[in-house]
Length: 256
Image 1 (cartoon, rainbow, N blue to C red):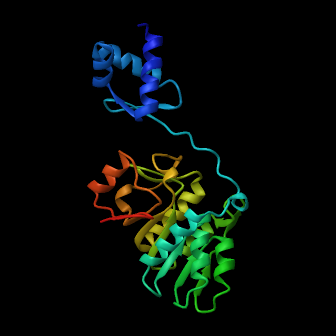
Image 2 (cartoon, one colour; image 1 turned 90 degrees about the vertical axis):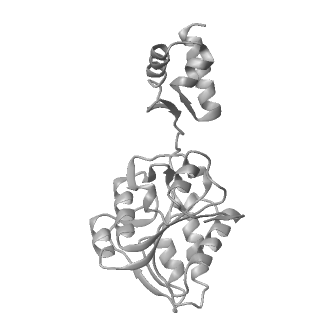
Image 3 (cartoon, rainbow, N blue to C red; image 1 turned 30 degrees about the vertical axis):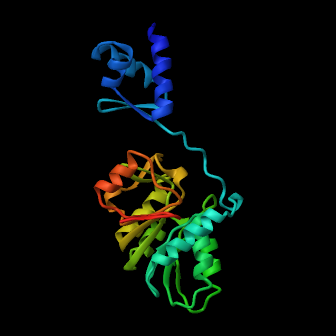
């Protein structure tokens, strides 16, 4: 087998199992560790593969997010919002992040009789929440970001720093064993400030965001207090969550 043929075979294995080690390559192709390392160096010249300690992994390519108003409603998003509402104490104070799933949560909160206290930079969520006079509502100012339809930047972060909140309810842009990430520095910055001002971090989103990574770090995985999702994560994220004793609530089961 030539190196090119072996690289194709290794790539096919990575597509199936997401990760591969030097030892696996040695066993599967009867080559030395030096040859296996050279294969990995060559293979990871391709942007969809990444060298890690002892091997390589497949990187999931993340599509550009749709503009907010083009994102569809779905039964899954409504169900995730309902599960999130169920874990919030009546009248709790919280930061409500942007995103279509959390817009569904805003829709539910707008129909509640409980006097929740909310801070948000998401304009569409604020519009829904403003229909309920029982809610205590604080909107953040700043620089308008049209893709997410929210306010971002230094002024939004400054204003958010004036609040102490029980929960930061955070949408998931991307989540892997290294933590939450976001596509822009401004969005990641506001999320970080929300986490620093809250006592409890709840991450909410669909499982298609798992195993992905965006450019800007929001927080380490250990900072999560609760993950609410539609399906249990695959490895290695699931093991990392278990090692950290982070509870997972899905639409079917809860793992404490």
